[in-house]
Length: 319
View (cartoon, rainbow, N blue to C red):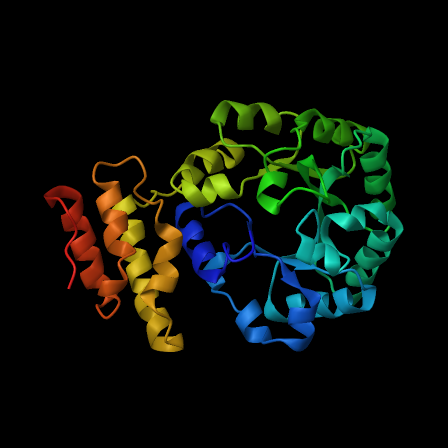
């Protein structure tokens, strides 16, 4: 979810799903060692519970990142061992780390020694085209020796050659049963299923045999369904849930605050909420207004008024 689940996206999702655990986009150790740390790690307190997802393979570097995560107030640090992109492979981390479980174990141990935060690992069920349950079982067993007790498993292999990251989310077959089998073999640990989820009946069935589910792109493109999924996982909401209008109004307030404090253009925030009205009459016209660069000089509240008017009146207006 690199370039997707930034702090603005997470703030938006938190408005819809107050009980879900949110994850940052993957941030490399190099970016935290040598880059603009506040830009990468700053977040709104409303985002809690929030996990920092990092990519790297040097135990000392990852230990430094764990200390930063604790200093900045994150609730968890997650090591990515599932990303198959060529850029990540050149950095010798991501999914290719599954071939080095002892190194991942050492990375986890170093991170746990450096900070009191829970250290979790996100990984695939295998690499390349080898369908071998023993491979992922041994990976999990070895990594667990380092103190990891939570495994977030994308239930596909990562094909490291010949497929783009997008195709790696589509072509390797899904094998949800593999994650359920891991839970049976390691009942003392927590297993969260990722990959190909979105239908409510499927979520209910999987939550009966694993400990949790992670939903990425489906939640991004149709965020309002987060309410439905959250209720499946945690039960009915206790407090009154906001309407779509109220979520949009809250985002307008957030955009105004972000512009005042960080000079953030409202377009940088609004891009994440394009799915808010999905399924409603006039949703396309609403999206057209909120994505119209010709309106960038207007205040977010004015843009919201135009977007809502466009839903019922017809074509959006530009200036």
